[in-house]
Length: 298
Image 1 (cartoon, rainbow, N blue to C red):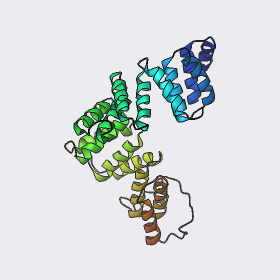
Image 2 (image 1 turned 180 degrees about the vertical axis):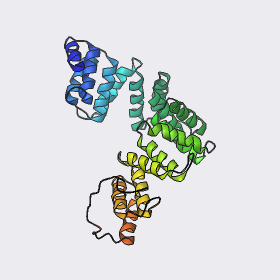
Image 3 (image 1 turned 120 degrees about the horizontal axis):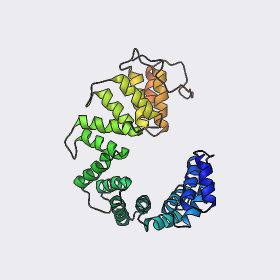
Image 4 (image 1 turned 60 degrees about the horizontal axis):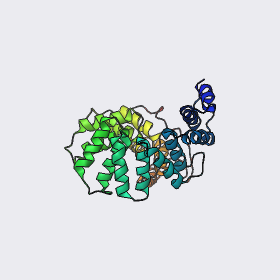
């Protein structure tokens, strides 16, 4: 129904309806996903000066959705929207400058976007201070920006703060706070937060040790392609920690998944499983097992 009404209004030239209809096509909500049609409607709205549509076109050109990837075109649309104080477009423009290694220009845009209320930009400022890009490295400013973004429940910042509290490198170690930050990120479906929460449960940091909970969160994270979570599951299966017995075949599945997603130690662990267990399968055989702990009693 929404698509029908938006289309009626869009065909009459209302830019907000045109942009909204473009969003439906871009996301496949109520209509068949069609990024080319999305671009068509975004363009109609952008030509009328709609800043949201200009930003959306910038994203399409940056990501190559519905159009051929073109960073120059993306930058031009971001600039149009940013000139009207569009917070996300200003941040996106800063990100393109960052990719071009124009660090001072990127910092400037991130500062402007942050002042306009863009939480992505606040987080990006933290990364700039952490890496010393366009500015002198400053751990105090880094923590300040990450903490600000985490205070708005920004998942990446929540994970950053959790790691900082675990390491105790720039702030005092506090596993309880780390656990809480990981939990908030995990509850938003962030794969790093899910894996981090699993590790806290597995190691009993900031919470009572609970392997069943650890496995639950590792599985959620590994299903999103997180290599560390898959590796952690492989280790639990290989060693049989908290299980009735070791499950080397499931360990193989998870180590292979970790390897596919780039975990540096997964190949070594695969070799160890083949060497230490009589699996009755060839090392090069590609077996597919369901990524599930349904047959394992914790």
